[in-house]
Length: 444
Image 1 (tube, rainbow, N blue to C red):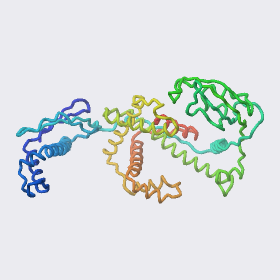
Image 2 (image 1 turned 60 degrees about the vertical axis):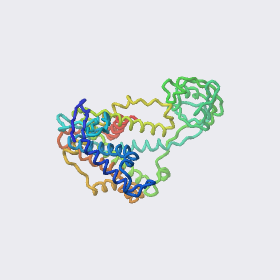
Image 3 (image 1 turned 135 degrees about the vertical axis):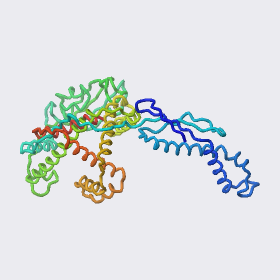
Image 4 (image 1 turned 90 degrees about the vertical axis):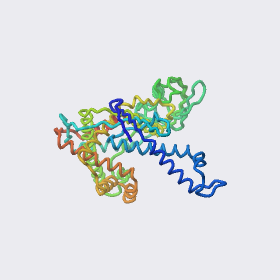
């Protein structure tokens, strides 16, 4: 076998592989003999079928099978021989004709992974938040819990901003009903702008049992494209108007939250405990995002276009799933590959950098460490053992946990070598920065 490697681009490679005809022919004859010993043809005894008959009936099929096998095996051997790390599946082309006593030649084109010789950490500075859960923080969270359990009390007066209003509405476009244009006993809070622009303004000042008729326009960038920019006529009936009341934090309220014993004191303990855990996770995420951004900033690498395109495809599929969960039909929403290219490039680059660190540092995760992490991640589940058994028998889940642990190792490795700047922060600042970061990194 003769192998020639050509660089057709920074990461593009073309392999030209030449195989001697004799290797093919000996395999073909060996395969035909095997067929002769197994097949039955009318007029011939088993094993006594003339070679010309076998050649006529099976020759072309056998030769194609042998060609496929030789390409598959020789390509694998050539890739190993040349120590090539493929980023994409090889595309086979330029096959020569299989002719007697002439060598068989073909080419394979593909992308290789970039060679990351070393990981640069120069100049990296990581801010480490120093924060604690204060009594004021706990009080603020309790207020949020109260807000999540608002009690609405009916009032007999015109609707105003901040009121909760229950309505039945029906919309038409050019006299025709449209999907999503009719709701009965629909509740919304005036001022939250949950309806299209202009809708709520017509409800301000309305009375219970009043019937309204008005027109508004769907915005030009409305997610359902067939409705974008169109005028819609709404008929609305006001069912009820209510004002919000925050519940008092007492034993009755605590019981409604599912806390049966200990009353308010238990609630405070559970809230604080949850906040401490939240702060711990948020601090980790705050540091993680800085580490990942820094690795990307100081380690510039050329990306295989095939990996980027594959990643865009995965992001598109995730976006479609998210849209479906929101009740938005994918065909009504513009999904642009180029809008996801930046995010895809970051994800691919980070994956390659983390992979290089893992390989160069020889990081490995034991089965016991994976099980310990699975136990930690499922600590809050009642059927923990059942879930752990499922995870430990699921390769995909095990791989996910291994990835989490490898990432933790990499972050620790980076932090040991870079400058750490402690930064005093409030609880809210750390937690909010965590969620902001997540949204920015995963806009889909």
